[in-house]
Length: 287
Image 1: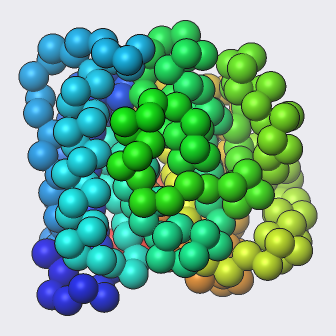
Image 2: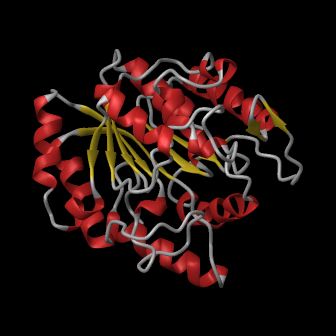
Image 3: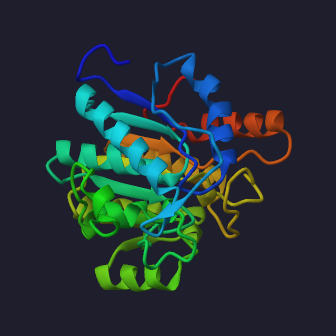
């Protein structure tokens, strides 16, 4: 655990119930020893029992609620200034993002690097899988009991969707209605990130949170994810973008999510380590 209330928190949160894929727990566990020898992690209890009941139109609702409550309590106790989260599915973002947004008086900017918008509600989701809902919940819409556990609510202008390319129809409607900022994988690959940096500077962005769902990456370059989605961001372009964000803004939080090893675990882990060294996430250095 951190030695004082002001240090960075490294959160190990291998939640898998939001995607109903136990392999995400296994993937997080494979990455953990690669990172934990250089930093101390605080762990969120995550049961492995593959028995998921749906409630409130969310698969695995009771486990997701319990894990979120524990994460909220841990963060509230430690009161970190910076958070790195190793997951797990995208549903783990509720506590760290909403905490950092509260700490910065609602001025956090969230870079959502993901093949998907994660903008469904329980009512609109075709699967009931919570990993397709966390950003919408952070924006204040979704299950009320989960939403009330969040420390704060994001506003649409705080969110930048980067690399997203597969949306359900209700998500597309929401993006248009809320005028969410989007930046395509093609633009990242074509090194047009100056447009994103300019947009961030125009809104006066300073404190950044980088959400990294590994499925944002082109699957021919990195296939070890839960939701393979063609047309993604190339690894070298992702590395360049992250470096630019780190150079120009204060990154106070980031995540590494949805690693699902395909084929040989040893090969998948080797691929993941090579990726992390190349991308060099802020708050995750020295690999």
